[in-house]
Image (cartoon, rainbow, N blue to C red; front, side, top):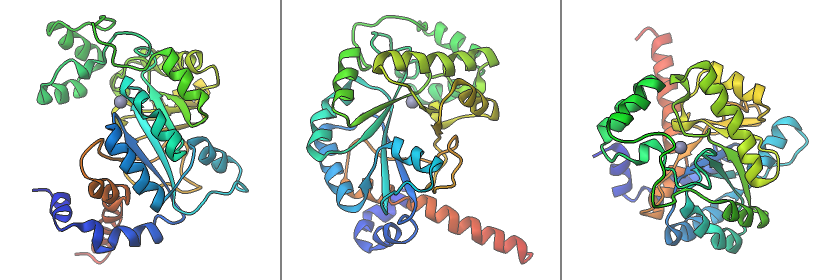
Length: 298
Ligand SMILES: [Zn+2]
């Protein structure tokens, strides 16, 4: 059993530690959560629970604050993001309206409004999936081809949002759209030209869907290199989110924004414990202790 599961089994949510974090470390920091496909019943409860404890703000407000220090951000600012742009996200729109909760959805723009599926969706074999992430991009594509999957392949089921759904979400004024590349490759494994294409063209495509400038980017699998950050800046994005764990401040590098991965279903206790960034906090503490030990020669 992992440490987190141990803590959850003790009903850690009521131990007061997450409360303490929210009212100390998290108070002046900006927390960004990452969902994928939350179940509506769970998400309804999640929004209720999160709204009680945080101030949910649009991603664009935080980016504005990074540029203009006079921009006021509430204490315990929380940003909700969704990676990939799954069709199931559309069912959440009534809940966003009900709770007046702004969110940002990062689209796999090349697969959006099509019946193509992302490569990691076509295999349920976890070790194989993990091995694919470690290969060069061309080796990954070749390995998938051997399983019968080709980029651009059309399936019976549509799994990504379509144009009408994007328009309806945008019309609500509660959903901002960012890019998550065209086809979700692992960017550091891509050639320069492939990475540039995935980063640049997905911006244009997202803008075609939303009708407004696409300013935000999300690195697939949270993986990025210095080159990828350079390409994002060159393409004209204003910010990019990673999966580096932790909280953000008004001085965080806008192209290395930290995010906390949270569950799409299950218990609200687990969601609230994870959203409190307890791991980020423990990491800071253990990191400090390690440094201290190093300095004291132990
Ligand atoms: Zn993704």
